[in-house]
Image (cartoon, rainbow, N blue to C red; front, side):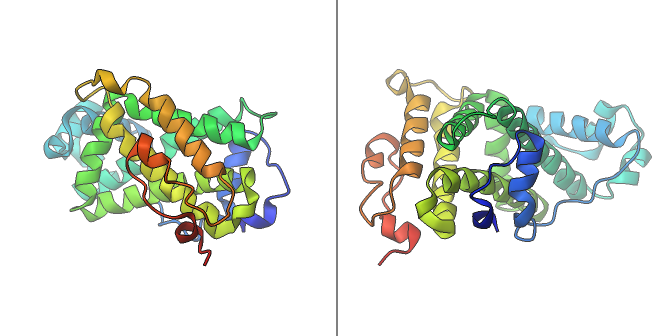
Length: 256
């Protein structure tokens, strides 16, 4: 369990991520089984670009075939159906992309505190949500996951790993919360980061009155994550800046 390792600091970068996620794999939805072959990654990259640029509505095997420069027969050797290709593409785009992003960030923070690592991770994710291509992809995926099982499995796997990284950082920075408290606060932080995309995305109309919102989201989420576990209304102030949380701390961490 993660909490049993809380007195140890993992090595930086790739090993840190593996260390954090090692005991959580049994809880994660099963990832797709990767393929080998010279065209596999080429097809996934073409499929990712198709999703980002055209959206799921115009996503097709023929379009991916054309972009990848492979024959349909070769594509279908790896992916029997459109749903299979979508699942592998989303896993490749979401899980592996952010996995590498965490690694790159943590490798620069070997001597940083866990509070600093938490803030840097939240800032990375909030900033990523401002990118037009990233936000458009997520807007499409949220809608798709509500009606497509392959997309739902891929998105669920992504958010499970996403939560576990944030949960670990919160637990290390604020150990008195315990495992359940860290898990629930991580879910709230992730939900707020994702929701902020609706106002921060440069793919949407800009609102001058929201200048500085990204910094405010980071500040509010880190402050919330580090609040002591004392049963008080620790999130009531966040309503002023985020407008989305109305829960009590004792509701979140199970304190009577």
